[in-house]
Length: 149
Image 1 (cartoon, rainbow, N blue to C red):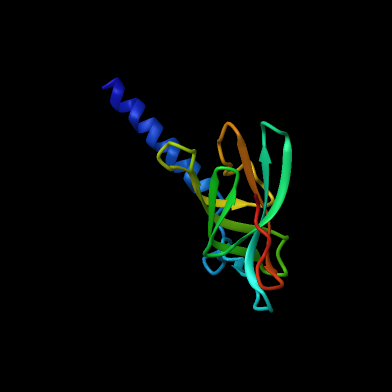
Image 2 (image 1 turned 30 degrees about the horizontal axis):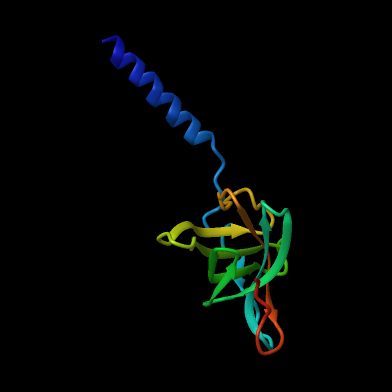
């Protein structure tokens, strides 16, 4: 009997907390402010920054959307790169897949997901030697954007 009372009190408190939680109006969709980079001359790229923790060197490089780019032993593929609409705070978000290709070992997928330029620690690459973060989504001018190493 006592267990039923505890369950009933818990259920009532959860229901009360849910009822007090403010919800956005039904006609507002707060997550739809990201969009692809507006069309312009050049190629869509994610501007990334890599850190080699062994040498303490950082390097900025461009990773074209839809192509793989190398940084040390890492192969970084950018599936999509989005920016906020002009009326929203600045933000760049890239969907990255990062694979470590150590010599003599099988490739190891280290990361697959969205990285946010404004909050790099939200979804960070966890690696002993390298750090990678998104700086911006932009259009690269010229025939081919520079790549790393």
